[in-house]
Length: 265
Image (tube, rainbow, N blue to C red; front, side, top):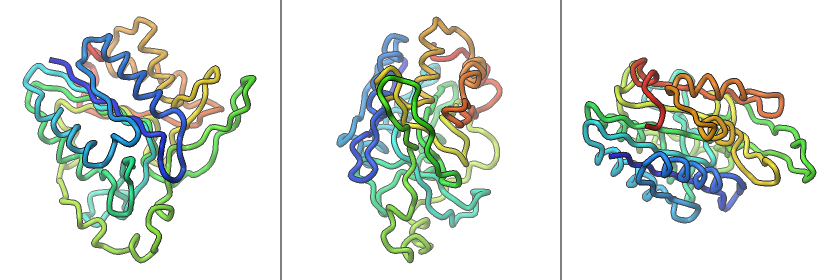
């Protein structure tokens, strides 16, 4: 069995985006062609509760030999790490449609899903969003007839936590139960990110159509009859990114065995 969940959010109350729904639909189309039973959560349907339930249900349903994919395109942000399991002192978060200071999908919560991957199953997690805010800037305009400035998929914590005391309050991070995964990758789990941990992902436009720079690069590779491994896919994407227009460096994380497995088969 092959299953996928593709999440895309444009309609944030603050800092709306343009290409995330297209990204989710494009990945859903590709994965459906590859034989995945694919569901989507778009805009207002992509609440935190729906995202967490959808991801965890998909992971729990995977049996040995099954393959799953979770894709997310939207804003990313961070909160202070109080468990001491982050080198940079920050817990990275995905921003759901209903995001607020009390409503973010934190990496510790996602980790609670990944540890439920059964032996012999495989889950690929793809994120076209920013995972921290140490770099905050805009990319340049596109070379096209239609002027368009690409934006980053990142919301600074100060835009979510209206009270600085809330941002500094240790209870924020302590709401989430810590999941100790150690330094070793979870077997059966692959993470492909659109940028590095201290970078950003661009919401861009190609031939007049909004898309994430990473999603466009990855799908261009995959839709050109790609038949290689996840590591070979990563190398092909890195031939396109970073570029002078999009200075973001996609990353691939997972065990050596998982990274050397055939991509999306």
